[in-house]
Length: 254
Image (cartoon, rainbow, N blue to C red; front, side, top):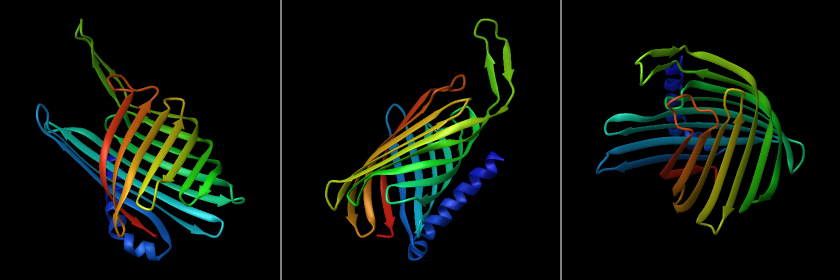
C-alpha cells in the first residue's frame, strides 16, 4: 500500500507541475518549488525535492492542494525518502474568520512509521490580511491514524532478538497551523509555516522558514530551513530532523 501511495503522489506531483500553466488559466494560484543539494568530502550527500502548493477561490469557498516529495542519499545509502499529500476546503464566515476541513497523508521511511493519516477540521482567522503582510492561523479536532513499522532490536549483552510487530494506532487528534508572510519589497519576502498534528501515538511539529527573492517573470530563488520534530519517536529514530534547502520557485496566478 505504501509503495502504491508513493507512486501515486510522485505521479501526481509531476503531472501537476507540467499542468501549472493550464491550471493558472483556470483560476488556481500558488507555486511549485524544486530543491536540490550536494556535498562532497568526508561524506557525499545528495538531495532533491519537489513541492507544489496551489489553491483556488470560488466565492466564499477556497480549495487547496499540497504535494511534496524529498529524496536523499549519503555515501550511496538512502537517507531521506518522504512523500506528502494534503487537501483543504475552506468557507469564509466574513473577512477574518472561516471554517475548514483538511485531510493529509504522509509516507516517511525514516520516522519509524509506514504512514500517517489525518482527517479533521475547525476554525481559522486571518490575523493580518494585507497583501504584503499577512498571518493566518487555524485549528481544530480530527482523527489520526499511525501505521507503525515493525521493529527488530538486538540486546547488546545477550544478543537476544526482539521483534515488535507492525501495528495501527487510531486516536482522536487535533491540528494547528500558522502561515506568516512579509514582503520587504516587491522582490524579497519572508515566510514562515508551522504545522502541528496531535495524536495519541505521537505529535508531529513541522516548521519551515524561507527567504524568497524574485528573479524574473514567474521565477524566484528561495533558501529555507525546515525543522520536523516527533514527540514520541520510535526506537532507534531521532526525534528531530532538519533540512536546509535551496530552491527554484515557479509562481502562478500572479
